[in-house]
Length: 243
Image (cartoon, rainbow, N blue to C red; front, side):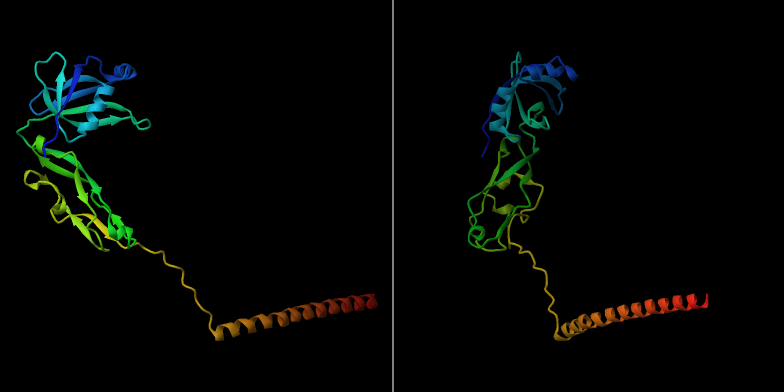
């Protein structure tokens, strides 16, 4: 299915470098147009108008870009968005002017629809190793997204591959093979409980004997200590007598 074409009007831009901060304070986004066989052009676009167009087009649908004062528009794709790391606000846009008769490469998101019985009823875990696809096609044939129905996944181990996508693959070239798994239902891993080592009767008996031997050992130490103390007292008495 061909994408809907969105129109957007922009203006040429004189300010460059750090001076573009002035544009952003006025809710205007600095941008540029580049493409095969054309000279890169600095432009600017109203933030509100761009966000409205981008919501519809994303990075896979054609935007008919008209530079104010120009007699014709140019088909472009949003090639790159530079955003603020904290606020997420768009700081700069790269528009890629394309030839509608030449193939281009774009990243298309995969959207999972439906509900998997294997997840709902069997407690399986849905693993999706591929969330987006690199697609090569004519600009007007690139889909905005591809949908994958997971309601057919009824057992643990079930998978869906690229060939299960409900799209016309005759006009599209993919970077991965048709048998590449997109979604896999895996068994939920259960944390292993630590192994409890049971004590044998022989080990238990040895431990008891060891505990019983301790008092005798202590008594011996006390007895030896008393004998040593008595010997010292006797030695002192003998010394006094000799004096």
